[in-house]
Length: 208
Image 1 (spheres, one colour):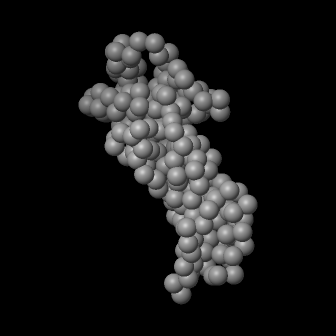
Image 2 (cartoon, rainbow, N blue to C red):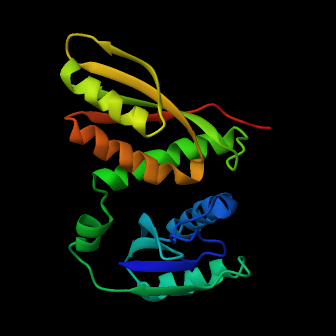
């Protein structure tokens, strides 16, 4: 296993990536994957963002070739500090036990896909957005207290429907997209508290 650690220029206070640097980091990752996986024996398997850095993980046959290739690649990105490293991991334990996403990490991946789609359509990510959410619950008896709870958190009810197999609750609130990870984690935990599941969120593109 080999990694490239990139020190972000504009991380958020919590150490994650900011909206100001979001597109630059996306472009960096796309070019990195193309450049390195073009070399034989290099496989890109994932990334993690924390504490103001973004770590990109690869499985490689020859670590020295990886280090030289990264050095050449980083020559095109002035202003970014970085470091590389590697360790033997023939059974892929780092991937299976560390990189492979749990439920919350997978939710974050889905959030990023929505943000990338919004950005591709010219969305202005820094302005507040009306975010629509949906939760599935098993019965009306669970839906009522769940609705009461989300109303106390400033959400507004769009509607809810009992289709016989369960209850769908649709609701919304205006929030900043930069807070989407915290928001979806909170709603996922809340839905589970009431025996339900959080289905996700959506919004409209704002170009102004």
